[in-house]
Image 1: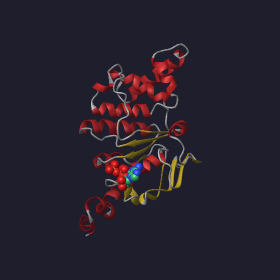
Image 2: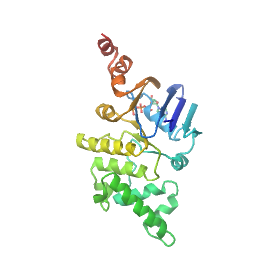
Image 3: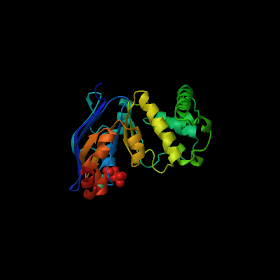
Image 4: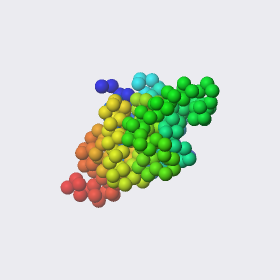
Length: 260
Ligand SMILES: Nc1ncnc2c1ncn2[C@@H]1O[C@H](COP(=O)(O)OP(=O)(O)OP(=O)(O)O)[C@@H](O)[C@H]1O
């Protein structure tokens, strides 16, 4: 199967610092690809370039054969690319359902409040968004919490709500920035399962995550960054044995032990 999303020689420099340099990889429909690396390796910067938050200094982002390099996030969302952020972007004072409805208005913020208030002219659209939002909540196991204030949800549920919102525009590729950060083991496993289900439906998943157990469990393919450069890639077993990867995380001594 051909690539849904390709990153070709992507790079960016911040005031002389090569935050990301010459990184290439591709992801297919239904595949879970994780980007890992020590703190400051360039993972979030890479995500920001792919999702149009940063203009790359060099290289290309290709979505379904189209060059979408530096395209605005809202336009990318319409072409099938959604993302979540490291910091939750949830409206704490709104209900779970209202937050999910907001996902359908990513590109038309003017309509969101009209729809929530059910103003004249918005009823048909509001009904569609309402039904879609309920389906999303079912998909992430939050239907029973629809009327709950988002501010009172557990952290794991908030994370699932954020993923639900990113799914609102039926993305073909979903970028998840640390979906398990701050979650306990049970919550992480629930998020695991959810991500696996989304991938099974044919969505390509691109994941940045520090929880190595989770990464090893759910990834089909792993790309390892260190100091902005790709130092390894492959399946979880291959990557976890790679001396360059071990060195990047633990120092060269550990890599020499692994080699012996
Ligand atoms: N907007 C920016 N301006 C200047 N430097 C930046 C900017 N964003 C990131 N950097 C630098 O680029 C490098 C890569 O940072 P980035 O946040 O992408 O790493 P990361 O792998 O996501 O780290 P972490 O795992 O800690 O989240 C770091 O040295 C960081 O200080």
